[in-house]
Each structure stands twice: as C-alpha cells, then as structure tokens.
Image (tube, rainbow over the protein chains, first blue to last red):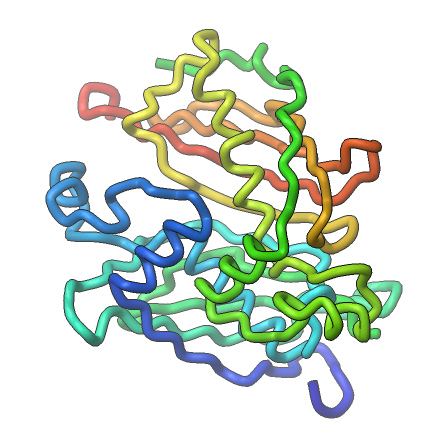
Length: 137
Length: 151
C-alpha cells in the first residue's frame, strides 16, 4: 500500500477473468468437485443458468485485491462474505469477468483496518457483506 | 421441515489430523493466481518472518468445509443435502496456516433456524494444531433451500 491509510482510502481495482479451466483447476486444488462447477448438464438440471464458479473461488479472488494492496497475505486476520448471486462461467475462451473494488471502512485498534469489498460480475453484485480485517503494521 | 433449535451448541468429535503440505499450499495459491512467493518459497517465507510457506487467506476451506459437512451427515439435523448451498463464509485467523501444520478440525453448530422455508445452519469449525494451538476459526452458513411445497 502507498501513502497513509484513512477511512475511505480506496484499493486499486482488480479485474479477473474466470474460465472453465480456472474452475477445474480450483476444483482440484480445493477438493470441491461439485459438478455444478464444471458440468452444464448437472448445473441446468438443478435450475442454474449454466456452470457457475465456486463461491469460494470468487471469495479467494476478491481476497487477492486485499493482499495485493497490503503486500502481505498474512496480514488478513479476518475475512467474510455472503454469497449473493452465482457467477455464471460460459464455456468459451473469455469466461466471466469479476471486478473487485475495495475501500477502508474503518480503522480499528491495534493497527488494524476493515476493508469493505464490492465484487461484481456483469454489473451485478455477486458477494455481499464482503469485508476483511487487515493488519496495517 | 423446520430445523430444531435444540441443535445449537451440538459439537462433533475432532477430525483426523490434516497435515498441511508445501505442495498443497503452492497448488492452491496457483489455482487462485496468488503469486506471492511466501506461498511457494520457504526462503521467501522465512525472510518475511514465517517458519515455512504460508497459505492464502481462504486456504482453510480445504480442511474446514469437509468438517462443516459432518452436520449434513447427522440424521438428527436432517438437512436435504441435494438442496444445500453455501450461504456465507467467515475466517478468523489466529495465525497464518503454514506448511507442516498438523490440523485437527472440531465442528460445532452455532445457529439453526428456518426462514421463509429455507433451513439455515451455521457450522463453526475450529482448526487447531494437534497440540491445541488455535489456528483458524472457519464459520460456514449452509442453506437448504425449501422445496416448492414449502414456499
């Protein structure tokens, strides 16, 4: 992070592309092999528009906006999200786009700050109540 | 169906030990595009003050989600597994997870309620080393969406 941190300080916006290949890779790394994250037949059978990203993958990408800003992945001491809307990932080379914005919502004691995140795909919020508590020192 | 509030406070036996490996941390970090060397280079991690490579902030889910799912296997909870989606997730890190950690997960039901036909169950998973050092509290809210008949 550059410069002093105050309430309202904005994090650099991050944009991520999510393709089917990314979902397969995340499934293997995380051990979450739910077929709604890689199989259109199963996804549509349960009423989804198509294959969707793992909520935890979206949560992990959103955290990158925070760790890129702090420069220290271990500075994240608390992190929470509510999964609002699924991120549909089409079976093409473009995939889905995820935009992560963040700003400092509060300065806490012990040199910590709360970062409030806004995570959108296709202009719609996909996570709500997404916030991280980070150590600034 | 309605979740029994009497389930709140129920705990399950500790999991088997999960040994955190350097390769698993590196694999997870690569999958989420986290390219900080502290995730894959023990020397860089030591230079940053860690005893070994450290995991990205959401790595705990690799251990905690399966532990949270023990509640789904509890016949007295009776959640319809096929309708379960992940509603919320929270991590409170007492310290970073790192390679070499031998973690034990203990799951407790923190909340159980039924709202508008949906069953909401909050499972808190305490991750600690087998020596009892607290590492991470991972809380998952699971939602079993009500069927058409209950809407």
